[in-house]
Image (cartoon, rainbow, N blue to C red):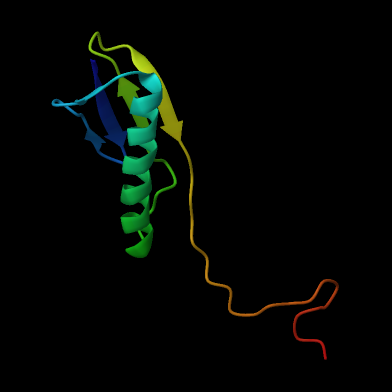
Length: 90
């Protein structure tokens, strides 16, 4: 088993100093996706800015083996317009 470290950069760098053991990089990938999904869900429910989030996973030698980068936003739409319809025109 190898130890992987899951470092989150979301405006503040949170360096994982403990890590977790995984049988292979695919198992570490699964944990990375699950972890970031939970953090993302919580942040979006609080209307936090997640436009520049990044997670990098490193192995025991400090080599980056996985990078998760993404942007996400929630926008509430007040009006729905049909294709070709001009707002305010009836």
